[in-house]
Image (cartoon, rainbow, N blue to C red):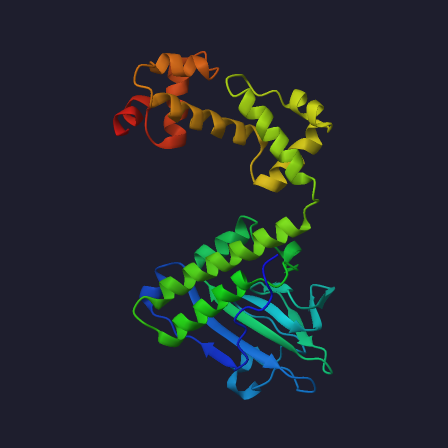
Length: 298
């Protein structure tokens, strides 16, 4: 785990951002970003009158039209949404989804420190449609990490400056933030031996890259059922074993094509493709170039 100090800023920062039609063409805009320390005994949210009215009822319950990410770096509190209640502690993250009622607040006697960022647009909505963000996984505990804090601070700094095209830079930061949170949450939640299982499977695949994949055989050597092996491999790599195996074949094909004295037919044969033309079509689908065109690029 990374060190836990970070650049945690204590001075309250609150931004609610206007955006132009040009900004909206990106399909992504940042609507708000902030950072606030809530001391013990202070009513939540602090600086209440500095927030637009729609944001003020957070401790009683509210519904927002856009996405938000809240990251707690100190203190303790609660987060409630759709009949579920979560205990919030340092390193907790929760996603607020458009149109979903929620409430959250620190324990009055303890307080907390939070970062937040709000955003909207069709490209962010696509993440929800495709399941990368979901109603079932709105709360996670990736832990305290300087990398997450650094991205929040980068977004805040860009918003403070509001230089030309700052929305583009900020939205790239929001995507990086989502990726950082999701990957850290997934890796923390996985069983420790997942990595050993996946690494052994990858090694077996590499040893047999010239053959057709045999999942039952690989599963048996690892000591798992085929369905369980598939589940673990996809959870850890975001690819099925078959998808990973075919990526190995493409990488090996690219290496063999660098050997000018090896024909395309031989490359196909050495990788277990009986049909050279099927191999060529498959290679182009995965790389964007036919084997002969790829060889000319080398």
